[in-house]
Length: 144
Image (cartoon, rainbow, N blue to C red; front, side, top):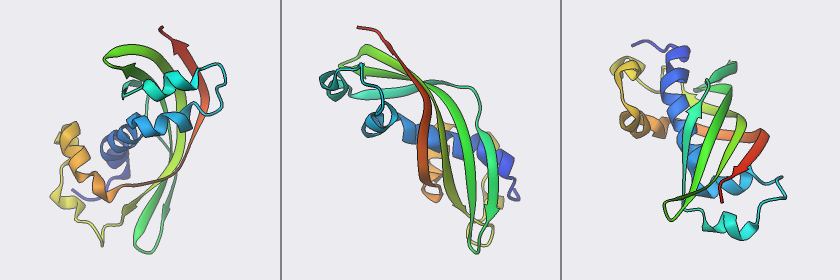
């Protein structure tokens, strides 16, 4: 497969950015400006999962010497659990940039991103470097 940035965005980048957002350690950054949540409650969260992302939108694509920089936007709904109990949900928009190798530095023709499942896409995810991610329009819905 020749490099098709739209296929890359809808598969590889979307899944790897989603995985990044799901990290429990990223939660404080996501809800950093929300003051009505008890910090002790945030500390108890041990699992986060994106249940819905509306789309992964390419904002800008810039080709560098050995890489391609992709600016993106991804609205999402994130569920947060503590000891298997759903504590709260977060809706927000992730705006950021990621860098992938150009065609000279990665053989895109050897990978069929369209046919890969999430695990496979995450396994190839080491070629994705997520950078400059910010969260906007953050809302938290408490479940406790």
